[in-house]
Amino acid sequence: MNNIVYYILLLPIGLLSISFHEYMHGKVSNMLGDPTPAIMGRLTLNPLAHLDPVGALALILFRIGWARPVPVNPRYYENPRKGLMYVALAGPASNFFLALVFAALLRLSLMTNFFGFYYLTGGNSTIIYLISNMLYMGVSLNITLALFNLLPLPPLDGSKILMGILPARFSRYFYKLEGPLGLIIILVLFTFDIIGKIIYPLASFFLNILV
Image (cartoon, rainbow, N blue to C red; front, side, top):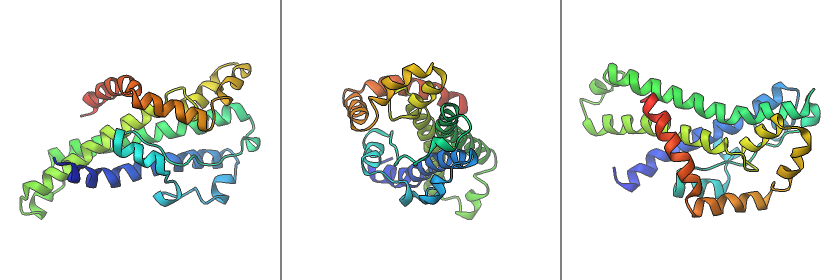
């Protein structure tokens, strides 16, 4: 598959994946009583509402990206620390869910001649090849996004999950890394391929299980 075709297939899968990720953050926060995501227009799957330029560039360059964080207000939660943890968990969980969906579609399509696409396309092997690759890409990308976001580095979801598990006194260490400093650390780790060496072996393990 040449690079142009790869990115054409990656774009819709990537936009769906990061949009669903952020939507689920907002949805869980809203379910916990926080109206902020709805007020800010983030309870939507419209990728334009969630797109982050740096995260989109990272998705293209490193196959791991992110969107603009959904604003939430933990003061609405009955238990703010646990509430934030549940909201954070919703993001990676949504990507694991999408990975399962794409894997199921890929397996089912192989068993049923791609839902009849073989006949609808007149047996066009190119279209069938593209469909299978898009589904496979959906599995791979969502596993990678889930694992990446589980890293305990602010502002990633993993840091907020860990904050909900650890005693409250440790939270101040994570807060110090929120904002530009945490993002710089992540970009440096990307540059030296440290994150890739952590994520991709795990992603390959789960990918082999699913497909």
